[in-house]
Length: 204
Length: 204
DNA sequence: CAGGCTCCATACCCGCTGGTATGGTCGGCT
DNA sequence: AGCCGACCATACCAGCGGGTATGGAGCCTG
Image: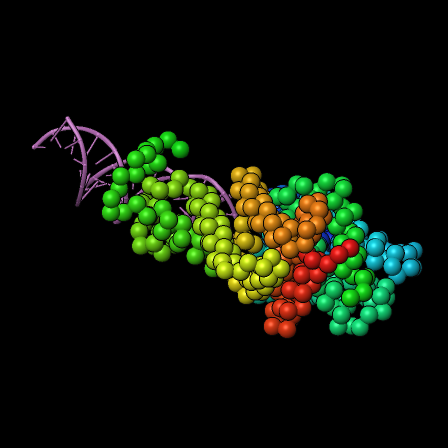
């Protein structure tokens, strides 16, 4: 809080300079594996091949590292979702592709599940983290609204309702997948995607 | 692990005997307010008007207390859901009533949200807790399957799919409600219930 | 009454972890 | 050269909280 003022100044550092990112990546990697409060700052520093002393030069607290790990997660999410849709133009296909990969992620991406679960439980008691997540979630929501709108030409209000329902279902799916193995068999993947598709596309 | 062998024996204790329940209730109350790892055993003991020494006579570890708090939660859930449906006989009405109260719980019951969120984040790394929650979740699933079956006369397989979708949507709703205030306004309540209703009842 | 059991309180330990104090190295600037 | 600031390592602290050792008070039994 008191020391370390420049840091965001000239950033003339020629050789290094990517330490904050490396630390955030290490934090994310460990958090999404063992859980946040099972990971010590020494662990993170060791994973990034530095020591806690230097870690504290870049981040003021463990909280700051958690926020940085979140930012890391947001970036990765956005990047993945954009990569997925390049060279797909048909609106329906774009929506279907998005739903398909989203369901895959929910059912298979264990790191994603663990990390979001941890963040949710922290966000309950951390206003700032909640706002951060809300901002991310809103951007995802807008993205989906755009997809559904392009694919259906429904009224905005109706699209919002459907997207909210979609997102809730996928978030819940992610949660339940971790203790309901019958959801993770490949046959249910198709069923779930078609259910989501119906919610998004079908007329009243 | 080594001491305390009887405990589950004759249970002749005349006056007391409800200490374990009181401790579990205190644990649940505090866990669902401040979060599990923000609550110390001293806090729980104080809330139950005893000391940590006596707490450790009834429970071997904090883990055991968490499991007991879960059992407390399971019981409360089952009791509430049963009370809700007495003197409602029409199958459709039973389903609608259940969905309505479920959505209310997701959107309003803050303690419920916090507790389940905490349990999920612990269950990621605790096999036993995961199994315990899975058993509870299965019983809830069977309950919903019974409701939908009675209301629609669909094939079992199709009912299971719809119920899984319903439960995912509600679980996700509970999560998103804590950082998406626009979901908690009373107008969206009706919309969500009708969406769930459609998933459960409408023909292909 | 002696012994044992249940149940609870007091007092204490100690490892773990977030956080700090401090000092050293290197590269740039005047 | 000589200072300064960015960057990182070493060593250390301190408090919190899970867990333990121990010692009762009450009751039941022989």
